[in-house]
Length: 492
Image (cartoon, rainbow, N blue to C red; front, side, top):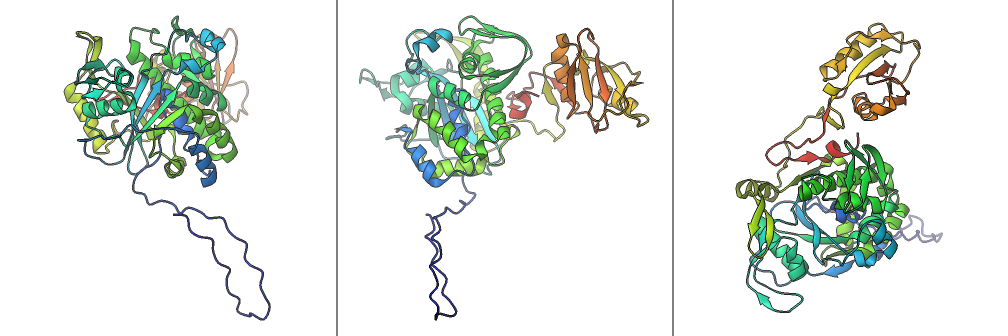
């Protein structure tokens, strides 16, 4: 509870009346470090990250709390899984295209009737020490068996029956979705958060867009996505196309989930690096823009938001890890349901056991773990020049790049300019992806495009050179569950 205002101190010499001490506003003491209270938002649950801004006042949070639509997904639930350590949030993204203007629906290929189902389903586990978030994507086409329930449309009672996982929402809303997920994973859900297309687009726009790096062109005629290879800052509508695209490659929904995870990591980096989360006024503007489309359980209120804010203070993309539930069969045919994805029972159990035990999913990596880049260093040819008067610097940089995998000429030379302070990566614009990869290996380096240079990149070593960072090509999934960290999938 908030502490009461302090009383004025008594005076040692009461002969002269003392003016009353100024009344101090109540404040909340920091909560004990018992249960982590911050959450990430899934790809269409992105506004949840915005809920976690540090430094916002209790009164402002209370006003924001009033904007959230409440649902009761835990009503009359019995025989639930045993609570583990940490906190588990079921985050779902729903359609909600009817809230988007006709012009935007046409522009971003959102025609047709809304499906009234979950487009994205994720479990976000927040570790008890508040230092890690594990995000597990549950494919919407997963083979599932619902518990017995009452159909929310017809009012008829159904026995448990096979469905695709996203159909649980259509039949029984948030409650049946939670019950089905708990039945499949044996993970007890502590909170439920639901965001639709509108909230997603507003979130991206209000934060000023989200940077995304792609190693290859991405084109999907269904959503209208058309991105050339390279770095892009996506606004709300284009970001929605990016996370909805299922026809970019043959990976369909699984490929889409990887792009969603990449986008989540990029959003977290955008929020934590831009200062948005530390600016109460900007925070207020962002949250007011998105909370009108959020639905949450009744237990996720002002106090929870404040706890989330405190936990976000030191959060970064490296604090998060992403994976998809292991799949055994990609086209598991079910009569009356269609083609589904069947989970790998043994691997899935080990994955969810780790969540229940509050264990990290990713393979331990040292602080010097390789950074993910668009092009493998083995494919990049480099000529090193010494841009300083420090003898041997060129040989040192050449050797360091070669040991990291770059194809150096092994014949460094002196640069025409010998007073270079900041290391420069000179490149032909046609090889910009290779240049981005090389620059990632040289922290603090500057990119400089020169037409006609050709495929061999040039590094002019400056006085600031300290080391070469390890880098490796994309698709960084490691370990049994193919887990990646947020800093491995965000732009270099």
